[in-house]
Image (cartoon, rainbow, N blue to C red; front, side):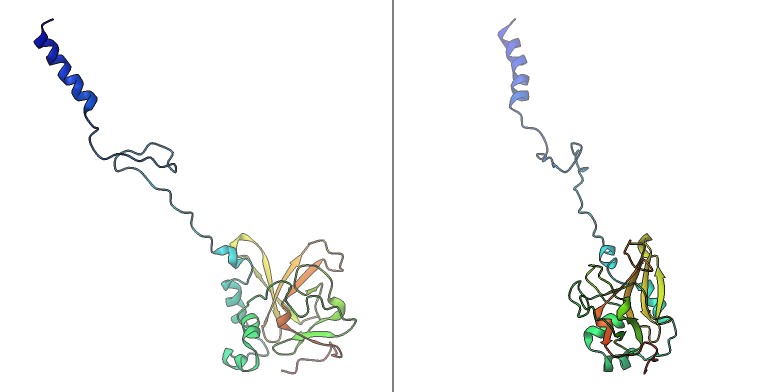
Length: 211
């Protein structure tokens, strides 16, 4: 082979060996399943937050709307309630809040007699005999004084929850749960906020509300 012909073949080989790849360098993400192509790589997006998790521990808006649309014997306005309730009582009784578990005054309160009245309107709700130890962190009662507590069923988020309110003023008490296996006559647990209650050792459960 002639020297001139050999040089003509070697020149293209040197170009292939020394030439740099055209275009910008590619960086491969460990978060992609496939090798990203030009202008087609996708970044991993953060998972959306789940705001309904917090709602599971309190009353839903639908339950609140249902209660507000009900008519009760004591139908004071929010402005009137603010004059007789402190901010925390208003938050729970009128805005359906929840006190932290294990912090309530009546969580571990087990008197031999007496009545738990509504902290808002003073209507009698539960007797000392209704209370039992559940270990849930809130006062628990297996039943209420007949006609004293009203229930509102809420099926939000695909789960059944039953809110309980004072049947005299509509004040939020908590929730009632059924079939948990407690050795009580009803197998129910009225899980009530202490702030929603006011205990009276000498009260007669037959006495009507003073409101």
